[in-house]
Image (cartoon, rainbow, N blue to C red):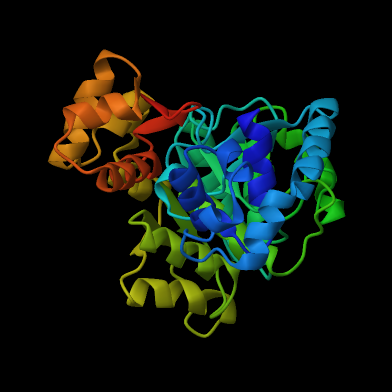
Length: 362
C-alpha cells in the first residue's frame, strides 16, 4: 500500500524527490502525507498552497493505482527508495527518485555498476575504444550502465550483450516504449542479462528536460563513470559532473585536441574532474574492483563513515527493528534532531523506514 502513496507523491509536479522525502519525514509515511491537512503540509519548506491542495485531493492516487496495474500486466517491477532492491549507491544522492520502474531480471545490487557515456556524434575511434572497455567490463562481471542513445551509449550496450554480459539502460521516458525506436532490438537483447530502468511512469514522452534528470540516475547508481568522447557541452558532461559532485570516480579517454568530440573529455581531464585512462586495467586497478566484488552489499553499507549518533542507532537496530519512540528512549537527542539523523541514514542506504515509523538496518 505504501508503494501506491510513494508513486502518487512522486508524480505530483513541482514537489520533487527532496521535498517528497521531507514530507514523509514530517508526516511519518507517504500514506500519512495524503491523510494530512493542508495546514500541516504547508509546514514543510517549499510546499506551496497549490501543492498541498493537490496532495489532499487524492487525484494522483487514482493515477498511481492505474500505473501499478499497468506494470503488473507488463512484467515491470516497481520498487521504492525504501526497499532493498533499490540501487544502494543511488540512495546516497539527495534527489534520488522515490520510485523506480525496471524491466528485466537483473538485481541492480548484484554486481558493481559502472557507467560508460559519451557523445551521440561518436567517431570510429570512439566506438572502438568503447568496444574495448565495454568488453573488459563485461568480462570482469560488471554491470555496464548507459542511456541507449546513438553513438557511445548504444555501442557500449551492444558490445556487452554480444559478450553475454550485464548492461542496464536508464531511460528518459516510460517503459511502454523505447527511444530511439530503431534501438528496440538491442534493447530487447539487453533484457536477457540486464535491465531497462526509469523513474518515469508509462505514457511519459522522451521530452528534452527528462534527459538531464535521467543522467543523475546513471551517475548516482554507479561506482564510477567513464566518458569516452564528449563535446564541450552535452549530456555526457552533465553525467560526469554529477558523478564528480557525488564523490564518484570519473575517467576520461584523451582525444585529438582539434576534434570537437574530444574537447569535452580533454577539458574534464584538464580540470581534474576526470582521471586520464588509456586501458580498461587502469580503471579496474584504480577501483580495486576485485576486492569490491567479493564484498557483500551489507559490508559496503556499514563501511560508510558514521557519526557517533549514527553508530549508536546502528548498534541499537542490530538487535531488533525499532519504532521511533524506542530509538528516542536510547538517544540523548531531541525528536527533531533524531528525525533528521534517521533521514540522513536513509539517504546513505544504512537503514529503511517501515510502516508505523519502525526502522531496520539494510
